[in-house]
Image 1 (tube, rainbow, N blue to C red):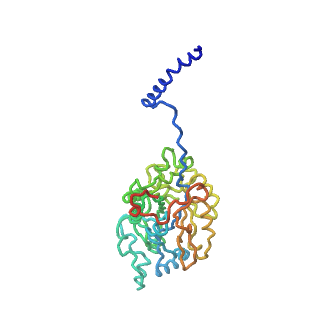
Image 2: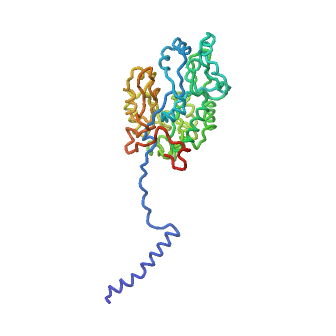
Image 3: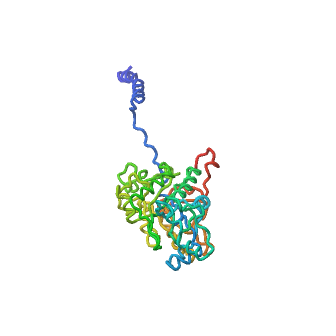
Length: 400
């Protein structure tokens, strides 16, 4: 045997031993080769979809007596308020809407809005008007849902907590649904000289969050803390990472503060990044709390909306305003809103009003949402059907 062959044989005996030692080290101490990187997670994020919803989601058109008074006091508002919406559960089930807007007034003692001026005046004149609150909800204390006290006062739901109960019950029946977005506009004005609403101060904002949590548990809410994660600010989170993945947001409710005034500033005062808060705020794109913005005019704001969407922000816009588009059957603004990439699009006409035209804002099929036309490349089209299968119907199968 050659000297070289002898060396090879001599070395070969310790190879099995090296493998045994390596196996022991890996098992005992986790020492070994670096693990392969997991494949990149490309599941869609929340800002990569687009949903439809209603403006003033609770609204019921004023009765004839109230409308006459509105025309007398604020004529421009009469035609603008001539529309009605289905109850919230029908908007969720029948229309597949996932965006809602509620106008809120404080009613700390109860009864503040129980006798609207237009209703009382109609009764005194002997007019035939339907009762506006047969269950006496407006007599109870708690935050109320109204468009304009004394004049445009009819709604499908008068109490914030009743609206939240409807949404919570629907959510629990439809596990795995797309998140519900709820815009909350806090109002403290009135056209009536006889009524002075309570201002929204810090105590009122705390009461609002308390009323929300009494109905919707924190684990059902997608809040600023959930989006911020390990980042210092909300803006950093959405700019560098994006909104949470859709699978993490399913089954949740997202609350958005609609105000861009002193009420919003008071809400931000304690922490500009909304730590511990329930609602996201509409602020400038350079603000630490920047995550969503209101840009209600998709015609004038089209380019800005697209820029904000590409930067990772959520944007809400309006497809129509004041019944004008329905009366003229003009789809131009609607089509601009849809093409802008705004993720949240509100309308007064999720279905046509035959008094005006066949104007409506829908996706035309059976879907509740669609991939975002600006940043939704690769997002599957079947995000959610209009009528989500209930948990009872689904049995033990996984949610959609």
